[in-house]
Length: 389
Image (cartoon, rainbow, N blue to C red):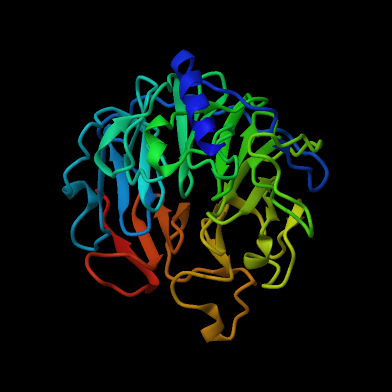
């Protein structure tokens, strides 16, 4: 049956690369509605002297500088810009990086991806081998932004609709077929049905959530809360749950924690036990408020931890697997948000599964956690300044 699905998907793709599925799940709201988020305008090519866009992976980081993308280990002496730019990328306007692969949007609205491809996450109709040179994603046009999860990726196209590709074992791409490793060359993007006007996406290992211009959140893939005796919903066939959210931003961890930002307050759903509520807490469908964070401007999630940026530029982190120096060693409960010491006022926080970086107003980058630096290196317990440009 699985091979038949792959064959049927291949035949359908000859007619169109934009297969569709049923409506996505709508996440119920977690409080009184607030004003909706405005649509985000499409990005244009940045001048060469514009501030670089910075992304963090498990063992390297990437920077988009003047349309080119430079990737390498973080260093206090050698900037990322000193590493040769990735081949095949000349006019990037948006960058997203997972632990083992990355994607860019070009000024012409196409999407290029590079890195590992064992789950078809490059979306290029090629065999499941890594590609150091960026390859075009099949059938995606008019892309505005691109987002990546552990093993799949999605793009928002000009009409606010969503195309996804890569691993679909739980319906996280919104497709009907689960692609086998020996047939991954048949893997191409599918159009997610019932989702439009999208401004932001959050991708976990088995689920995907979308935020639209009215602040509503829709999700598809594995159910965020299976519950005792409840079977996972059929991939690509999740039913609407109803509700309205009015969120301004959303974020996801690789293993199923999702959080939304509403008027400076954070609510989380999914596998929240590792992030906020302790090891034995159940997963939740309805977003639960996260106490102690104060007014939040930006929110990012790693593997078992989260970090929030306050309006005043302070970064606070919390969770089960905090990067860097464990607060427990200082007698602090890791589930209680605590400020990261040694940072100047920040304008953004960038995270991988096991590390985090703060970006200052002067576009300086300070990082802490695992996998930083060249060669074998232990975790940085405290933030250190690294060079990007």
